[in-house]
Length: 74
Image (cartoon, rainbow, N blue to C red; front, side):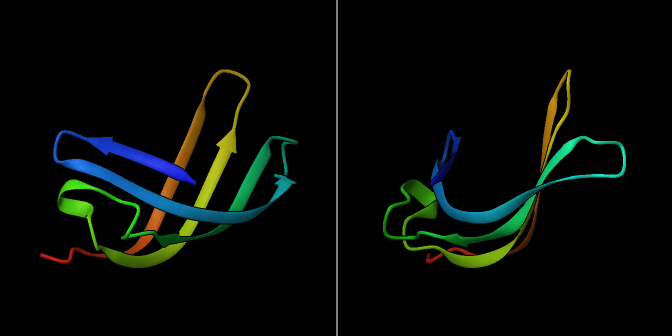
């Protein structure tokens, strides 16, 4: 699970993906995520959604890009 913690609550994402190398030999994880609303808290409690995730693992830094939909329960 992936946890995104904010002052307003914690969003839990269930992520699955595949690791591969890009054209420059840098590891990249491409996959999907589903929001786990029952496990989330604060404004994210009961949220729904899904989307895509790309995690680039560079030698000096990592970057994660999420795209998709998030619907808050409240």
